[in-house]
Image (cartoon, rainbow, N blue to C red; front, side, top):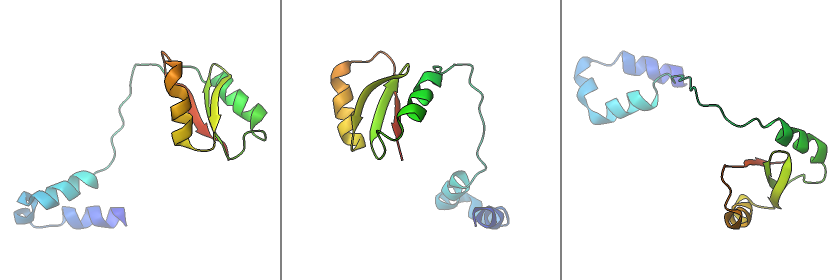
Length: 99
């Protein structure tokens, strides 16, 4: 459906292209662009291993992990974020909902 919408916009007469609503639609429906960043994220290998090892214990809960350590766990994302606030972490933890 998105492809069809893009085709319709591409086929629109040039007089329509000046309409701000059409310009907005063209921007929203434009093909996504890929940008490669030189910035490296943290190695999350230990965090993903923790999830594999503790999946059953924390099923249905939100967890925050850093370097394979559980920082907090909660039933809701909101509650998890509240529990993380006082920790004053230097870098963002991995936040994951275990299903």
